Amino acid sequence: MPRWLLPESIADVLPSEARRIEELRRSLLDLYRRYGYELVMPPLVEYLSSLLTGAGSTLEIRTAQLVDQSSGRRLGVRADMTPQVARIDAHLLGRQGPSRLCYAGPVLHARPADLFASRVPYQVGAELYGHAGQEAELEIIDLMLASLRAAGLARLRVDLCHAGIVPALLERAPQLEAATIYRMMVQKDVGGLKEVLAGTDPVVSQALLALPSLYGTINGATSVLDRATEVLPDIDGIGRALDDLRRLAASSLWSRLDGVELAVDLADLAGYHYYSGISFAAYSLDTPASVAASAAIARGGRYDGVGEAFGRARPATGFSLELRSLAEMSPAAPASPAIRAPWADDAGLRDAIAALRAQGEVVIEMLPGHEHEEQEFACDRELVRLDGRWTVRSC
Image 1 (cartoon, rainbow, N blue to C red):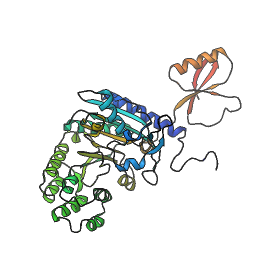
Image 2: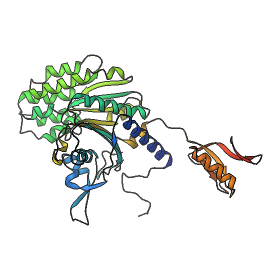
Image 3: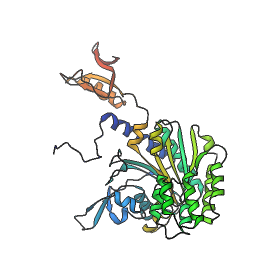
Image 4: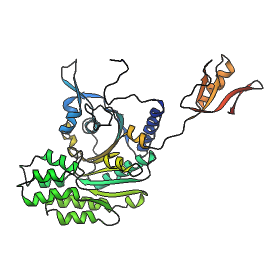
C-alpha cells in the first residue's frame, strides 16, 4: 500500500482551501465574540461514557473507539462537540445565569454521514445555556444566519420543526418502534409509514401520515401551521408545539433579514435524539436545487436536559455547522496580495523585509533559480533597490 494513501473519506486540505477555511474560522469566532460568546476547547478524546451521554444510538455508531492505555477504560474520539460543551457548562463552569459558549475544531466520524461527506469534518457552533424562553432561539437563529452571511451566502431558507409532536403521538401508540418512525419521517417515506402503521389507532396513524406533507414557506401568514392545527389531534404536547412555532414565526427577526425565506417542515426530525423543543435547519438558495434540498448547511435547536447526566439539567439551545463545507459554498476569495523580494544576504534588505512584515504585508523572498514559480499568492508589488534604498513598487 502506498504510504501516501489516506483512509476512505479522509483527505488532506491543500493551501488555497486551507486558507479559505482558516479565514472563515477566524471571522466566525470574531463574530461570536461580538455577540458575547466565549470560546471553549474541549479535548479530542474523552471517556466514551461521557461523550455519548444523551446522544442516542446514532452518535454511538459514528464514534470511533479505542482503549486508554493508562486506565484500561474505553475512550471515544468526539464525533460531535455539543455533549462536550454541555459537560463544560454543567460540570466545570457552574454558572447560575445564562452562559454563551462557542467552539471550533475537528471531529471524527467512524462512518461518513453520506457518500460524499468527509469523516473528519470541522465543526463550528454556538450554544446558549440557562434560558428557557424563546429569546434564546431567536438569538441563536440570528447568530446562525449571521454566520452564513459572513461566508458570503445571501439567499437562505430556514426550516422550523418541533421535537414535541411525534413523541406526543407515540405516547398513544407504545407498540410502534420510535426509531423506525423517525427514520421514515426524515426520509418522507409515506409508503413505508403506511405499512408500519397498519392497525394503529386511526387518530395517531392519520396524524403521523400527515406530518411529511405539512411543509411550506411562511410569508406573513402561518398557513402551514393553520393546516397542522386542523389535521393534527388536539393533544396537549402538539398544541404547545404549534404555539411555540407560531410565536417564533411571528417574530420581527424575519422581517429584519433580507433574503431569508422562512418555512415549516414538521417531518424534519434529523437529530431528534438531542432536541426537546424547536429545531431549525438552514439551506442556501444560491446553490443548485439538488444540493440545497439534500443537506442543511447549519442545524440547531433546543436540547434541554443534555447536561442532566453531568449534574445540572440546564435549558439549552444552539447550532452547529461544518466549516469545510461552508467554505466550499462561499464565493471564492481572490488570491492574497503579496510583495516579491529578491533573496540577498544584505542587512538593508533584511530590515526592509522585516519592517514590511511588521506592517502586516506578505513578503515572499525569491530563492535563486525559482524566481518564476507559481503559488497561491498574487505578487502585485516588488521590493527593489533604487538610489541606494529598498523601495516597494508595483509590478
